Length: 344
Ligand code: FA5
View 1 (spheres, helix red, strand yellow):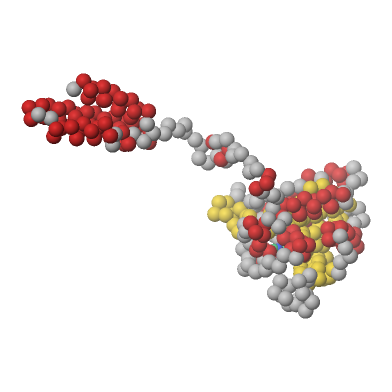
View 2 (cartoon, rainbow, N blue to C red; view 1 turned 30 degrees about the vertical axis):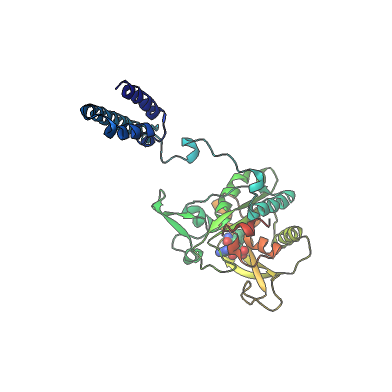
């Protein structure tokens, strides 16, 4: 019986130290005790068997207590609405050999750099905005039919006016903010010259040229005596710098409520001679919309349209990059395919 007491102590110590305490129940020492019972003289068997059973119950109870301890994790209360790094340490960055900047991020840096060298400053857009910046400030008053053309994603939540918030369908949502932020330049005799490369969202029918999530670079330039020739020259210069060669561009009249006159720039389709799926058989790929900033847009930012004029443009970065690298389908960018991404 003394050996049973000693074994009990040993097994209890093992249970207390184990991460998998149920293993201890299966200890060979216990099995050996059970095997010993039938070999004992009849008068000893009863007491010995009882002692072994009691040992097993004591160990089973200790195993249960230990298992409960292991399954109970003490957690401090957290704010579940906070960004993840408020509640836990930010995860370590991936080793550089496992990741690179996304091709669109790389190209946005190139685009921004070209415009910075041309005297534009870069600003960031946002991923949720209000109807004032998406429409009113851009000369689409409430009820304007052209509001429906923008295939916007809206939230269930509303802003202070009771209007749904919007995932920006174009970077033009930043025009009013850029004009207001840099208005003081005009008083100092300097132009407003801002670009905003960022993400945009549209509820589109998807195809080789149309994604629901894509990128644009917005540009606004305001000064005294700005005219459409300066707009065309700026864009032609930017595109030739970006592609590093002379280009054939097509400039067509177009309509945007926030520019007057408005134009659309297209580049010759690099994927075909006679029309293909990417250009919808047209041999041209529409790259950007632009025009002279409408007086009402200047007025909404507190700029006197009798004294100042300006141009604005919004260029699709995905399409810009597609034509640089001969990528035949815009949907590759957001598909997360490593085979595609590792080429950049
Ligand atoms: C606009 O978004 C206007 N805000 C552009 C503008 C800015 C005009 C300033 C005047 C003054 P548009 O809807 O045409 O215009 O889009 C501009 C460019 O974004 C297109 O030429 C195209 O290159 C790109 N684009 C538009 N929709 C998609 C899409 N679904 N997927 C990928 N690129 C797109």
